[in-house]
Length: 240
Image (cartoon, rainbow, N blue to C red; front, side):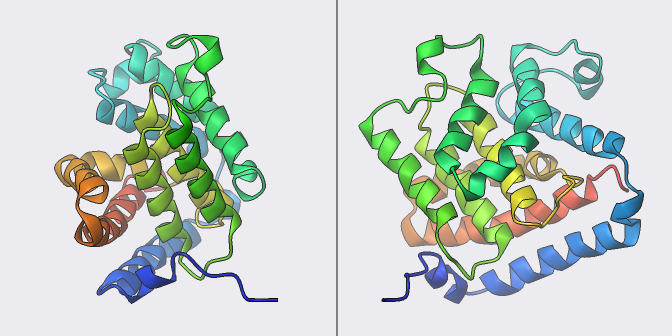
């Protein structure tokens, strides 16, 4: 039988990409190893998820402060982000077996109460459904690409395809975190990639536009941006 083609293999030949992802992964591994994963508690994961929910909500347009979100007093976007974050990790195992179900579940968690029930977890149109299948195939296939790179591609594809009726940014960032869990980068979800994106908000938003509209150059720029955000997200970990 022919060997399956690795769709991400060409990305590993782009200048600076392999070394950037290796450095980001090394930094995350050092953080998690040095702090001793066996000594961490569920409270640290909960804090990481809360920090991520707040950062993701701000990127989605929320005006709520972290203190307001922590007190349960955030605006609607923040409440949606928190609801999503509290359940997102339970979706991670589906990414390796039923990613379409995982994406649908993430959207349903984020958008409950904001869109009619019939649209929860459902793609907007046939083109959106096809894009979701492409992203799912990426997760189901075999690749030599680093897990961080896979997470970055899933994030950008979901954010720029906007396949759901609403909350696509929240879903994309939650999916990125879930990939990091599912692929063993950060199994207890102690880093805060959403905070990394918020810290670099201007670059984050411009690189997503470039990914959508900029062809190969835009793709390359996103791939070089993402490891910086992952590194910044590790610095935001409550482990520190």
